[in-house]
Length: 68
Image 1 (tube, rainbow, N blue to C red):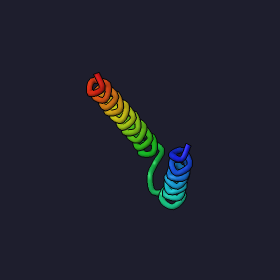
Image 2 (image 1 turned 135 degrees about the vertical axis):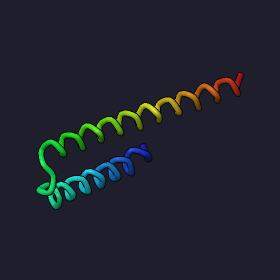
Image 3 (image 1 turned 180 degrees about the vertical axis):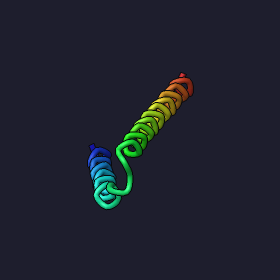
Image 4 (image 1 turned 30 degrees about the vertical axis):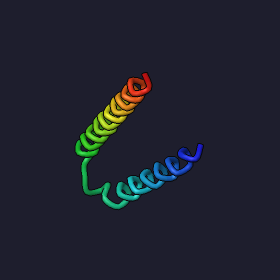
């Protein structure tokens, strides 16, 4: 439970940064560029999530083998 609060705050801060950047610089890019940026960002989040999950599984498997 201690971990959840700071993660929520970090997520909120990041969302505010993104919203602020969009408000300040959104008029400089067109709809096509905004869509491409959104797709690249989504792919990046997906890859980072998959990598984190794989690392977590690997650490759990190593821990289980060490106990056996």
